[in-house]
Length: 404
Image 1: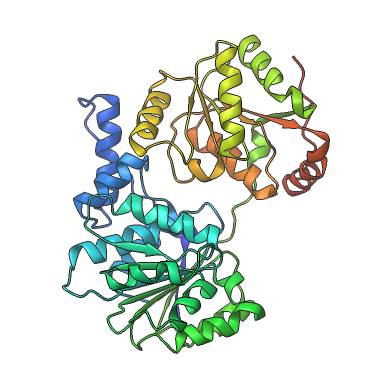
Image 2: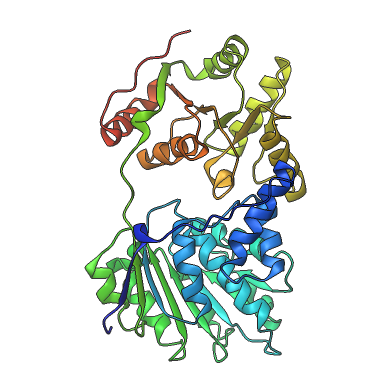
C-alpha cells in the first residue's frame, strides 16, 4: 500500500449555513438540512430520504468520507462507533449507483460485514438512503441455507451484503458473478481480519476483479489491519479519529438501584412526580419496549415508541411529534435511535443499563449535542452491577445515587 493521504478529522470545519428568519422553525431546520447535504453534492432523492429518517446535517466523519467516495478514491477509515460511518458509505454508494445506472444484471457493489447483525444494520441503512432510487439489494442470511437463497442470484442485484462465511457458501454453489463489480466494502475490518477470518477474506479477494474501488472501515487504528488490507487498496485516503474525550461529567447524572420487577413502577413514579419533559428512554430490546409501553399506558402516561416492528411512516410521525413537543416521552432501543436527530433532550433514562460502557457515553452525548443541561437517569438491578462498574471506570467517577 503506497503512502496514504491523511486527514485529521478534528480539523475539518463543520458546514453551517445561516437561513432567513422568515421561515417557520421546522422549515428552517429542513432547509438547513438540505443545504448541508447539498454541499456534499448529493442528489435530491437521497437528500429527501436522509431528511425523512431524521438526519439534520452530516457528521464530521461523513463530511470527510462522502466526497472521497464520490470521487472514486479508495478509503481506509478508523472511527469509533456512532460516528456515522455506515450512513456515510450507504449514502455515497446509493448516490453512485443511482446516478450511474447500467443495464448489467450482475452485482455492482459488494459489502462484507464482520457479523450477521452488522450485515442487517447495513442493509437497513442502505434501504433508508436508497428509498427513492430503483436499486435492488440482497443480503445473504447465514441463518438460512445457501440453497434456499440461490434463486435470488438469477435476478438483477445491484448491491450484495454478506458475511465472509455466508458469501463463500454461495460462491461454492457457483451462483455469483463478480465480473461487473465496481465497489468493495469491508466493514468491521478490525474484527474481520482476525486470524479466524483472515483466510476467508483472502479467498474472497481471489474472486474480486482488480482495479475496483475499495472502502475499508474499522473502529480502532491498527497496524495489523493496515498491513492485512494493503493488497486491497490503491493510494487510499486514510481517515482516522479516535473517540473524543468523555465530556459527560458536565451533565447531571444519577442511578437508582432497583429490583427488575419494580423498574416500570419506578419509571412511572419519576415521570409523574418530576413532571419530566422531553424524555428519551432506552431499553435493551423491542420486547422490553413493548412491555414498558403497555405498563405506561395502563398508568395513563402518554408516550411514543419506535422499534423494528413499526412501519417507517409510523416512526417518522412519532419522531416529528417528539421533536415538536407533542409527545414528551419516547421509548426506543440503541439500534433504532442510531443516526436520528431527536432535537433538544432534557432527560435520558437508561431503563436498561448498556452492557458496553461506550454506549452509555453515546446515549449521554445526545444531551450534550442538544445543548441542554439535562439529566441522565439510570436504573441498575443486581444483574447490572458489573455493567455499572464498567461504566464508572470508563467515565472516571462514581455516579451518585438518585433521590426523589
